[in-house]
Image (cartoon, rainbow, N blue to C red; front, side, top):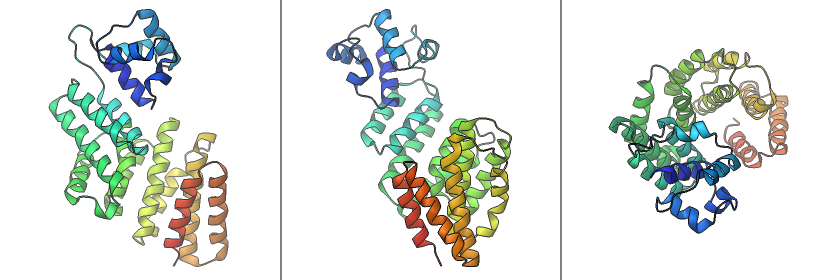
Length: 285
């Protein structure tokens, strides 16, 4: 019986413990054994748990094949779970995801590919970029260079690991993605595009190659402003003003950077505002 394993996958993806996930629908000791495959769960209780956690029935039952007993998690779900664990700096959760991958029906190639992403996550979680294993960097670069069509999952992976690349490599892959999705109406993809451009700007500043970023900035100007994009637009505007200041030494641009940093802090992104402040100090000529 694999229903418990599918429930566990959803619970981990929502970063919930068992008590919060079941919300008293069944007892926690009983539910624990459901996840272990020891107890069965009634259809009524299962539906209540799915509804409580915002999980659609059709989506849930696509996750596994009741007849053959193998878990059928799409590869992109593992990547999404891994990225969430990466951002939460939760190595225990990543270990649980690795076990799920081993038990899944992914092909050997897809399993190896997914494990590579997890290895890169663990490496970047524990080390600064300059200390990341060079062989691992090479493997991740090779993986993305071999992609012809960047789907949502692959775009997300590039966004997460762009720090492993230099500006030349990031520019090639970033340009490919921006060209593919330049007319997208998906807010999620627009966020990814803005994230890519912001990270390319950071790489360009670090390598003193700001003049090469204009082509990417022009593409972001075509993305219409909506509330969901506010943070990303503010970060790009901050980086633009930093570049202007580095090129002209006009104090007005530095003041604008400080104003935008305060705005980012005021919308609840204090830690990121502090990161921008540190980046500003490090890159003022």
